[in-house]
Image 1 (tube, rainbow, N blue to C red):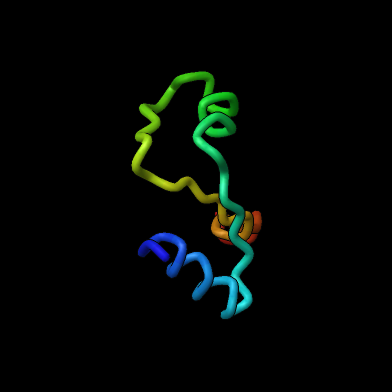
Image 2: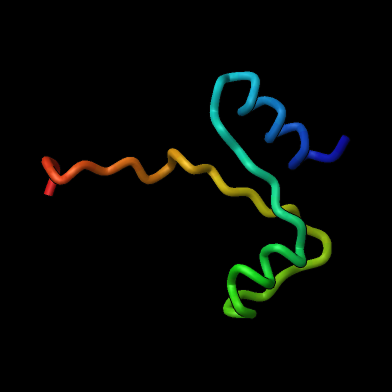
Length: 56
């Protein structure tokens, strides 16, 4: 298991929603706006930006 898979598993064990994306999915979603590295894993944490209008 690589370090990123370990981090993903640890976060999910803590109840943090985390989705893994393939390199193709990242490229398709970002329309080549970012450089996609073949040695990296890509994640999305849906709850990371949980803002309310009350804080603005």
